[in-house]
Image 1: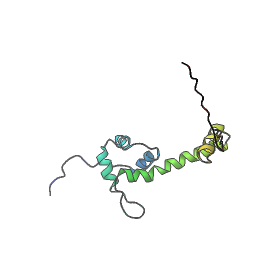
Image 2 (image 1 turned 135 degrees about the vertical axis):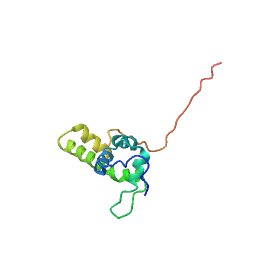
Image 3 (image 1 turned 180 degrees about the vertical axis):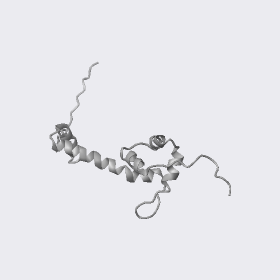
Image 4 (image 1 turned 90 degrees about the vertical axis):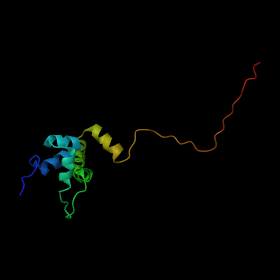
Length: 122
């Protein structure tokens, strides 16, 4: 039997990959962290099983699932800050979650007539 050709297989700690995805790190940043190429990262992700027993298609699919944890964590921190009295965060959440606005809208109803007079200056 022939000896394998190339470099030894680099081990990747997917608990760390998950944490980096939660921080919304890019594929390039994650690959750099493990000192591998993005192609190697993508190939290794394709070896990872989903809870339903199927496999991830690529980094983008994996990232979409794992980065959601980061969004949840960020929202939790925002709500905590708002609940502790951070007025700026309360205003941000009010505008972005509750649809509040600090703009006034004036609706004018009915017919509008505009009269334009021109001077006949010669």
